[in-house]
Image (tube, rainbow, N blue to C red; front, side):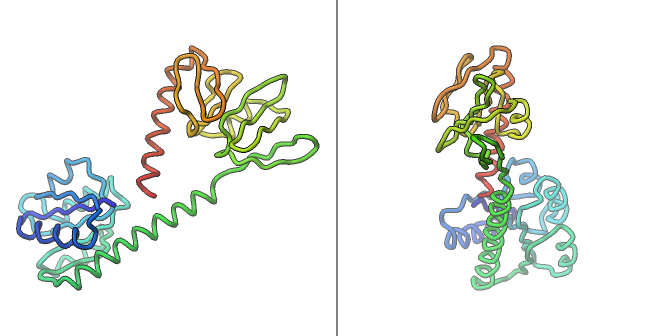
Amino acid sequence: MQIAICEDEQEIRNMLEEKIRRLYPKSNLQCYQCGEELLLSECYPDILLLDIQMEGKNGMETAREFRKNHKKTILIFITAFQEYVFQAFDVGAFHYLVKPFDNTKFDNVLRNAVKELEDRKNKEIKSFKKEVPSLIVTTGGKHIAVHLEDIIYAEVFDRKVILHTVDIDVEYYGKMKELEAKAGDDFYRSHRAYLVNFNYIRKYDATTIYLEKGQALMAKQNYKEFVKAYLRYNQRKERKNNIE
């Protein structure tokens, strides 16, 4: 969990950091002393505690710019003035803490923010699992559902497509081009006869992809694009892991 503090008074910054570390000692905590510093950073916090009255760019101005690239961050304003409360809702603030506040008030607000974060992540995980598609193939006169995420790689042999999954191998008459279209961005056609699932790659070179079970050929002309696609896959996977 990543938490950020943006507060121009060092004493208050230290106080907030102490409170957060007391409640969530394992959290990744970042501190910023002004809005400009926060906006220039590459920080993508799950929760942001933001002071409103700061020199230079104030908290409201900072929040409006911050929200352009940080739609999901849970935003908690900290201020000594109540007149900003309605503006706070305009930038999707989760809560509004008015100084001075005691430990009980702060603890309740932060715990509620963490609970909101966990609820959001659980919903996203459930939604993702529901959206995992299945492939229906006909083999031996039977219709079989194969989850795409379970396919390690597919190959064409003797006019059949062979699906090598984590459990079994499934053969059926079909076209690799059609399977490639259904498989999506987590797969790559490394060779006219092979389609690989990025998730199961152990290593690769310019001629061969080594998977958790088996290996696939790499066409020389596809190698550079494969490396780019694999990089994009790993970036997507990292973002997903951060959500979870």
